Length: 168
Ligand SMILES: [Zn+2]
Image (tube, rainbow, N blue to C red; front, side, top):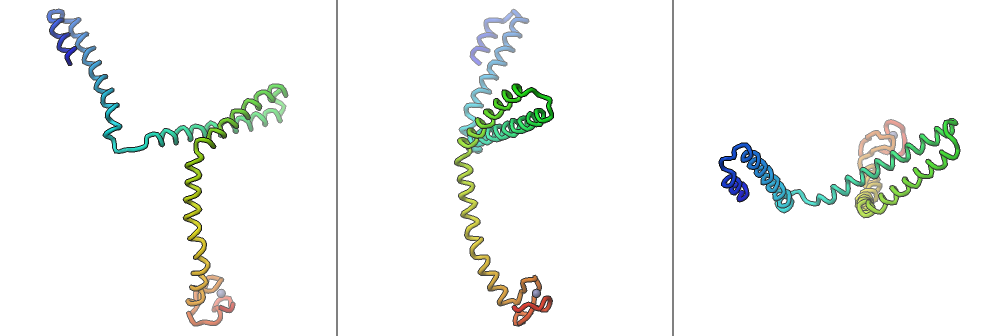
């Protein structure tokens, strides 16, 4: 703003140049404002962990590239099997693609190791307790309610299933 004011004071009378300089000053000031906003926005923003989304994005990009490399490797093998390609060319290209795929897999293992481990841990902990008590409770329910193995609901005091005749 100081620069804009100075420009206006200095350039009074030179109307076309004045307008150009003034507009340039206004543009540059707006850029400075934008920069300041960008710097301050993360401090005020309520959305945390932009790093994780960036990591997720790169992971997705890596997985996409890996799929692409593997697909072109398959196409290459197909082309070679069809006799469309010389052995030397095939060896060179497939070797390059294989190295690329290996590199991508290594990157994926290194980058996503923690998240996947945590996800697996959480999954196993959630599934373990729900698997164990289920057989016990269903056994009890079958005894009490007269629910047969075939799925038929019998009277609670029934000795045999009314549908299939199995002993309850
Ligand atoms: Zn039955």
